[in-house]
Each structure stands twice: as structure tokens, then as C-alpha cells.
Amino acid sequence: MEMKKLRWAMDGAFWDLDISTPRTLDGLGRPVPGDPLPLGLSRGARLSRPKQIDFMQRFMTAPFVPPYTAASGFTLQRVLTIPFADNWLGSLLGQFNFERFVSSVKNSEGPPPDSASSWMKTLGKHLQDKSLYALSFCSDLLLTPDDTLLLSVERYGDDKKPRNKALFQHRLPHHNLSVEAVWPGLFVDKAGDYWDVPLSMSVDLATVASDSGASYRVCVHHNSGAPDRLDSGQSEGIPAGLLPGLAVKGAISYRKNIDLWRSNAPKLKMVQPFDIFLSNPHVSASGIIGAAMTACFGEGAARSQIEDDDPQGFRGFSLQAPAVKSAFLADFFGSASFSAQHGNFQRLFLDLSRFHARLDFPSGAKFLSGATHLAEDYFNSQKPNLEAIQDICPNATLSLQQQIAGPFSFRVDSRVAVELRNQNWSIRVDEPIFALEYALQVLGSAKAVAWYSPKHQEGMIELRFYET
Image (tube, rainbow, N blue to C red; front, side, top):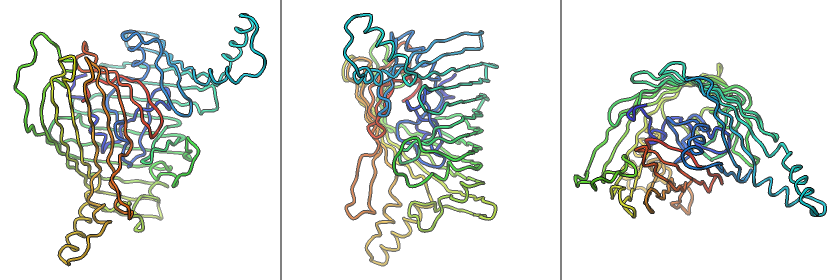
């Protein structure tokens, strides 16, 4: 796959891309349609989870891959690949809950074993606990050079619901087409809570990403069944985007990149950069502007976010037909980003320092409404309204990366939230993601990433290709 045909992580600010999570064996979840994504988790084109683990076993001397969640603790994953044919690959992914096993051995009742044979019997008894195991079978079939069909089945030894997925992908010269069905589907809302939807189906057509120019995307999404929260705890209610119904979305955007400065200094001779995408010192800026429309039918339309008493609600153009449970929403959005890099990522120490900042305006109508109110307050010599100031504040995201030694670098991504509606308004760091990256120099631009999210209390190791 050509690098120009990959969708970049930055597009995740507006598109409903997959997120990485160890809550499922395939390492994927979906954002609640219409809600912003948790920063640093958005995923575009990527290897499947079994292929990632297989690569780490074969070429990175990793016999096991240890995902972590607060609910399950550390688990160990290993995959067995089964090449059925030149265009058909099967994989069997097994997961063993190591932390739960150690805990069960420590808490076992009875006197300690008095011999090696009795100790082995006790150990074998604990290993027979089915709740320690999970298994996933994935079939990856290359129908044509441009068509792929992926089928996966996940089964858990405890009381977790089994998961199933069918995904068809077709690559056109300038578009990507995806047809997906998952039952149940795992979703995460803007508060970071996980939800199971009994059946979720989607059809997605998107133009391939480009450095500059216009692009568009059309998506049809359908949910059926009553959503169920994955974890216990208080919630503000089921997100409207997960309720049974059909949603048809369309968006068009224009992107422009500008190089403010780019180094022309020669690189070290006969020394390959650890990552070719991170080998040019520069200062650059980019911007995106676009419009989105959604037509929704069903229970989700009846609870679309357009209530007048909701300060966070939708303020764009909207039409409702409650009698037939349908609604039409339209708005425009924008984004501006700034990035700077020092170093060529060639030397062994401190040869890469990167900073990236992005300001997202997910609702242009809300921004114009707030700006209008502030202008009125200014001309009338009145105190600025905090609600209006909050409306014009963008969603800010920051990313910092620093080389430690050789191919290793440390990175932290985080949103920055400004809360003005409360009397004690403040600026706070929201949803930080800490990551240790290892650049796979032989592949040009690829890396193994070990990340941890303190808010979700989960982390995992995964491979990422052609990503900045």
C-alpha cells in the first residue's frame, strides 16, 4: 500500500476511525458516532492485531505480548498463524490472564504442597480454570489485489460476551470502501465509558488522504438492540448515537499544509535515519475546513443533541420530524495545527525533539454564535458572557516527543480542556497518553509503541506504520 493512500491519525479529529484498546482481543473499538475521539487513540489503515503479534514474535523476539487493563490486570497473548493458501491466512490468538492466575494461586486454601508432584497437581488445577483464557480465530482472505475479507470470532472463558466481526475492504484508485458488521460492537463515548451494542453495521466510502486538497466521506451506520454499558458505574444515560436506528453521514473538507521553514542542511552520510518520516527538521502549519451533514432515523434521531436547554448541544442547522423519529443536522467545522521538529533522528542521543499542537473547532455554528454574543457585549460595554467565551474556545491537543537513545523515544499526547462555566474556571490536562516508541529502522517508517492511558487504566504494545 502506498504511503500516500494511508489515512493519517490527524483525520481522527472528525472521522469515526477505530481506536486502540486492549478491551477486545483484536485490539479495536469504535467511537460513539458524533462524539469526539479520545486523543491519541484514533487509527486509520493498520495491520490486524494477529498480524501485529505475529510480527513481534517473528522479528522482535517477543514470545508473548502483555496487554493491561485495570479490570483484568496483565494478560499474555500469543498467536499461531495458519497459511491455508497464498491468498488466505488464518490466525489463532490465545490470551492467558497471568495476573488472575497468580492471584488465584496465592489465595488458594489448604496447606502448601509437600512434594513436587502435589505442587504440580495444584498448579494444574488452577490452570484448568476457564476464566483465565480467551481465544480468537481470524480469517484474512485476499479476494483480489484490491479486495480483502476479514472474519473474526472471539470467545472468553469468563462471563464476557463473545464477539464477532466481518469486514470487507475495497481499495479504489482514489477511495477506500469498507463494509463492516460487528456483534456485539464495542464503543467508547466522549466521557471514556465503554458500551456494547448488540449489532452494529456500517458502510464507509472515503477519499484517500492527501497533504493538501479537497476530500469527502460518506458513511451509513445502523445499530440494533439495547446498548449495555461494559463497566458498572454512574452514567448520564445512553449516548444518542448508540440507540437503535440508521444514520447517513456526509462530509467534505479542504486541507492546506504550509511549510514555514524546512532545513536544507545535509544529513549524516552513510547513516540511515531511524524513521524517514521524522528525518527533516521543520516548522509547519496546516488547516482544515469542511462541512458535515447527518440524516438519522430511529430512536437516535429522537434524542439528537439539539435540546435548547443543553449548553453543549447542537447549534447548527437542524430539522426534526418527531412523528417519524427522524432528524437532519448540518454544520461546518475547522482545525488549525502547528508542528515543529529539531534533529534528524540519526544520531544516538537527543537528535529528535518534536512538538505538535492542534486546535479543533467541531461546530462552526457554535463558534459563530459565541463570537456574535461577544461582539454584542463589547459594543454594549457589557461584561463578556462566560458561555460565549466557552463557545469560541477550541478543543486543544498537544503532543511532545523526545528521543532518549537510539531508536527509543518518549511521547506524551494530551487534550487541554478549558472550563469557564464554573466559577473556579481552570485549564486542565485531559486524557493524557504516555508512550515509549521503538523505531524499526529496517522498515523505513514503522515503530513498536507501548502506550498507557491513566484515565482508562489500560495499555498495550502495538505496531504502527507510516505515522507521524
